[in-house]
Amino acid sequence: MEEFYFYTEGLSVGYHGVPLIKNIELRLRKGEILTLIGPNGAGKTTILKSIIKQLEPVGGAAYLDGREIGLLTGKELSEKLSVVLTERVRPELMTCRDVVATGRYPYTGRFGVLSREDHRIVNESMELVHISELSERDFSKTSDGQKQRVMLARAICQEPDIIVLDEPTSFLDIKYKLEFLSIIQEMSKERRLSVIMSLHELDLAERISDKIACVKGDRIDRFGTPEKIFTEGYIPRLYQMTAGSYDELTGSLELEAAKGKPEAFVLAGCGSGTPVYRRLQREGIPFATGILWENDLDYPSARALAAEVISVKPFSRMDEAAVKRAEELIDACGQVICAMKPEEAGEFAEGLQRLYQYAGARGKIRQNL
Image 1: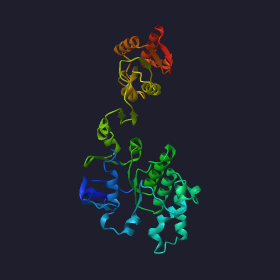
Image 2: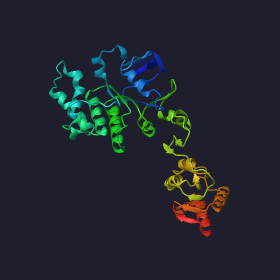
Image 3: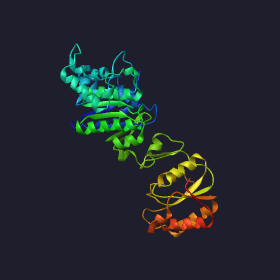
Image 4: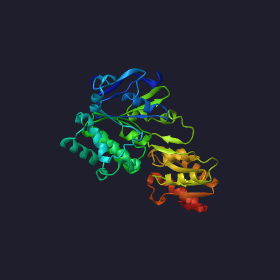
């Protein structure tokens, strides 16, 4: 076990002695990022709270740097591990800088007096998460997103070896989500900071994580690299999806397709069709589309939203059978929406030019939406 900075052995977590999740086996090296994913209420937060000693494990144990976490003193744990939870903190009459500075308390001694070095670390931590301009602002009067970044700065200020975060991006817009996770990733690589967190955003979890643990029912259903987790069909099963679709390769999440026979045919490719497909879905118009290569940017959304997709294998010619089937669908549809420029189709995509001419001769062409 020496190679793992954090690991669990037979860890079971729950409440009042009743296990919610049993036999949790997690492994994390220094500088790695581990993300917990799974449905709401699956127990991700319970696992995190058990790791940081907010909850007593029902069985087994978690280990940090070779020592059982449950046996570490509060000071020992605070010098190795820091925490950012979703629970809103409400400090009275404290500036953002005051809140960040509390991260130095494990090092300041009984009276909590900050040294010059402590002040330097506070400043550096605030700069790192881009909140220096909030230094003198009343913490209680900042936005949720600003509060989250202040709490991250506080955790960084603690100079831990491992940081635990529960849904850290929940209150952040897309700009700050990416900034926040970029900071985490940079610190994991440059400072060998180990990270354990839970995330709802699957696309972000897939991109940032070295390891992923999938919480399902009373167990960790899968544990491994993103490449082992995001395999075709697994995520819908994990979340027990009953509507819409999720494509593991692209991270594309789509609503349910419009029901019925195709009323429109979409000529598309190279990503030009996806916005059209989604517009038709919103308007409740069933459609067919093609001819697409099965590695085309439009293919995942087409497969999820179209009543029928005419496709061919990647980089192969658009054969006569595919063209004929597309012509049949064009005849049956009231309109043909051209989302791309057929004249730019290459030698292997001459079938698109034929379909454009075929639809044009029948007066069905409509240039995009």
